[in-house]
Length: 115
Image: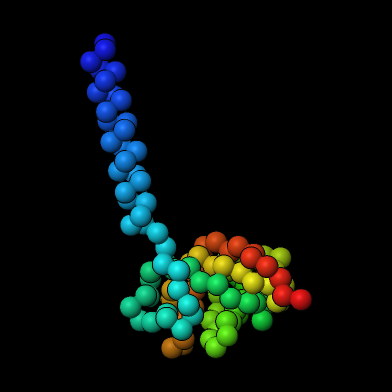
């Protein structure tokens, strides 16, 4: 019984260390809008920007965000209560539509609101 307990403890500790090491490799890339390119299509990324336009459609929302020099469209599969001039962080997958990059949002975090 004592031997089984020691083996269980060792396996648990090894599992925790493995998770810690893997978490360093599984982080989502934090990118600027200008850095999005063909190589990132179907990859998960994280970007931040200011909402400057929101269009509501029957089954999704199209949110346009910008930073100092670039802009990109964010596709949201449900309707969120967002307004313009909010700074948001988006985690999602890069897609291409009509020769433009878009982000299919998985998570959106409100960072701040511009005055």
